[in-house]
Image (cartoon, rainbow, N blue to C red; front, side, top):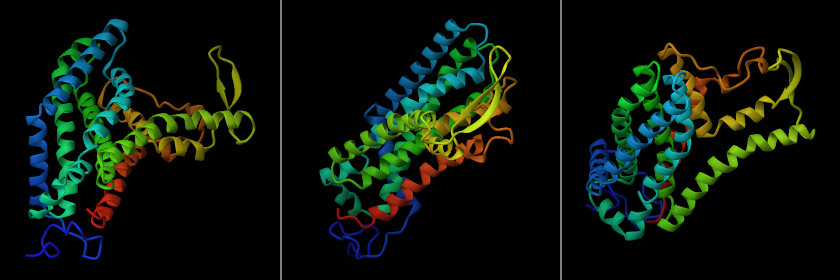
Amino acid sequence: MSAETGAGTDATDTGSSPASSIDTESVRAVAKKDFQDAVRSWLFWGLSAFFFTLMAALAGFLSWANPDNLTTISFIALVSQVGKLIIPLIALLLGWKAIAGEREAGSIKILLSLPHSRKDVLLGKLLGRTAVLSLSLLIGFLIAMVAVVFAVSEFSFPAYIAFLAMTIVYGLAYMSIAVSLSSLTRSTTMAGAAMFGVFVLFYIVWNSIRTALGLLMQRGYIEGVSYTTTNFAGQQIETTRLPDWALFIDMIDPGNAYQNTVTLFSSLSSDRIGTSFNEAAFPDGLPFFLQDWFSLLILLFWIVVPLAVALYRFDRVDI
C-alpha cells in the first residue's frame, strides 16, 4: 500500500493528498508509547516528587505564616498564584520536543510509516504528554494532601480535588499550545524559541497590559468608568476603573482565567472567597467575561483552538 493511500501521509507530500483521518486505537498506541518513554526516563516520577514537595512545602510555610486563618480556599487562592507560573513552564518544556524533536531526528518518517496518520501522531503526543503532567499532578497533590489537612484550619476535600482538576485543565491548555507549536516547527531550536515566546507573551507581556492600560487611562488617553466606593475609613470616594473592553483583553490570558476560576470552588467549602474584582465598580453585576464560568471557557478555548489549527496545518506541512 502506498504512503498516499495508507494511514500515514507521504513525508514528501506538501498538501496535495487528502487530509488524514483519525484512528482512536492508533492515537492510543502513540500516547501509550509516549507515556511509557517518560516513565522509563524517570520524568514522570520526577514531576510527581516535584509537585508533592511543592505542595507540602507551601502548606508548611503558609501554616507557619498564618496558623489560625489558613483555610482550604485561601490555600488554593495562594497556591494558584504559584501554579500560574510553574504549570506553564513544565507544560511548555514537556511539549517542546514532542514532534519537532521527531522531525529533526527524522524518526517522524518511521513513525508515519506505521499505521499512524499525522493526526493520530499529533493527538497521541498531546495525550501522552498530558498524561505525564496530569498523573504526576494527581500523585503529587494527593500525597501532599496529608500535609495540607494538618496545615489548614478546616479542610474541604471536594474543593481541593476541584482545584486539582482545574490545574490539570490549565496544564492541558498550555500543553495544547506547546504540542501544536512543536508540530509546526522543523527543529527543536525553532520550537524552543516558540515556547520562550509563548511564555514571555502570556506571563510578561500580557501581565503588563493591564498596567499599561491603567497608565494610559490616568493620562487621559483612555476613558475610564467612574464609580463610587467606600475607602478604609468608611468614606465615600469617587474612583475610576478600566473600561470593559480593556478588562476583557486582560481576561483572555489563560493564567488570569485560571486564577479567576478559584471562585468556582467556594460552593464546595464552608469557606468563601470573593471575586478579585471590586463589586462596587459593577453596580449592574459583573460582566459575563469576568465571571468564573467564562474563565473556564477561556481555558477550553486555549485547548481547542491551537489544536484545531495544528491538526489542519500538520497535515499539510512538508516533513
